[in-house]
Image (cartoon, rainbow, N blue to C red; front, side, top):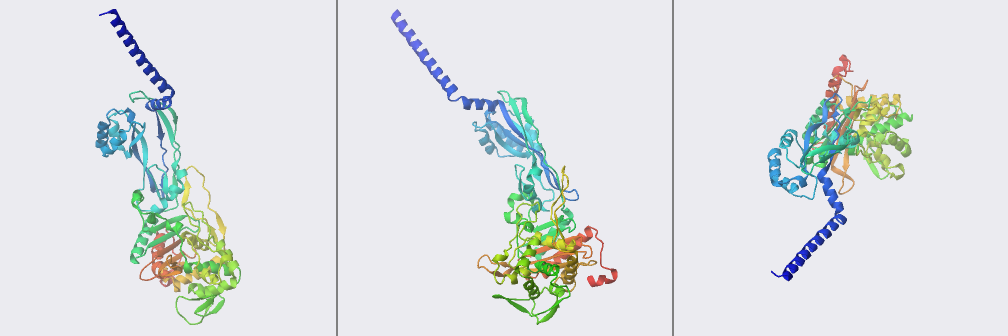
Length: 564
């Protein structure tokens, strides 16, 4: 071979090496200058792994210490796809151990652009532990809680539920989420290039949520829901609601809604059945509202319970003619009889003497148009038309509970004030928060002790020989009032001819009230009257509550037969 040919080959080889070196140099420069950030992040993700340490969510107890909402142990399985060499084999192992779909897991593990993916959120702790023992590189595990509701449907509208992230989504779980949820901790795990754990740095402990003890009694709550379910079925009603209140403390002992739902299966329940209608829904109260008008005329000294009025069957107010529920001739009635006989004409006559401005002041004084301040989220203040917007006939509607919308809780609070000697106490569901001092509920005197006694005597008359005889409880004097009101027609306007709300609200023992019960029945079929559809449910709930709470009877033995 000639020297010239050798030199040519040497020069060619040098040129090739020079070109290759130049390409490598340019590539290295491009990686360092342009891709340094993404590559740094990729390297960090392979070496450092940020993990959230979930806080323990507080337990919700009823007043007797029974658990209504608890956290069950679970383990979340996650993966770093960049550390998994054989995604298919890992997906099969996960599916076999946890019972999940291997195809779905494989899709997650095959995306090597991600450094973190969930494999199974809140998996069964035993199965997850079995998977952990297989020591699969690229899989990680951390403990979590799965929210559970041991009593199922009992108090589900009150307690609500928390989602997969253990954050409240409805009810008290939502309204008191900050107290219950606490704050999560975090830690950073350092791993070697093969995915093995080397160290934990930057650890911050989780702050657990606080436990709550409610005023709700699970036994009484369960009975209320049974009675409401039977009442709804009996009258083929759209819904039924009840509130059981301690008038001396403002504590809600039970608050039921039917139909209900199981908080453990909340995704399957429609939003309509998840509502706590006692707090979020309004209705026109009808005759149960008449105590507001009577309170006003008695407290201002305009009348006494024994004053009498000669009342026709009907009365004209502006462009409307309003009559009593039961046809009758012109009668003379005392103020007490106006309430016990639930005379619309009588109450309107009293309201006309009181006047629009004064009546509006008393409506506001009783809290209508304002939230009660209960801890439950989404409370409705009701609908109250301000006096300057009243029409000529409003003074004939509002005094008898029409043209005004209230919540069941608001109405229960009014009767609680009467039962408590004229002092209204803010209703509440939370008795105590763990680690925090107790704060007493707000109190406000709305009527005098004298007027509360007068109203109690009148309301006893409603039950003993008026429209509420079905509410009688053997052994106890009961004070209460029936209510029946047509529902507004959303399609044609005005009021429906077929859709009504029947209600009853009262308290016992009348001489020393311990329990207030309100029942509403929405759109009953067959009959509409509160004294027929709601009063028996009131009786069944009240009788159980008085016996369960061991409240002594207040009817003398010789008068017992009269009260039965």
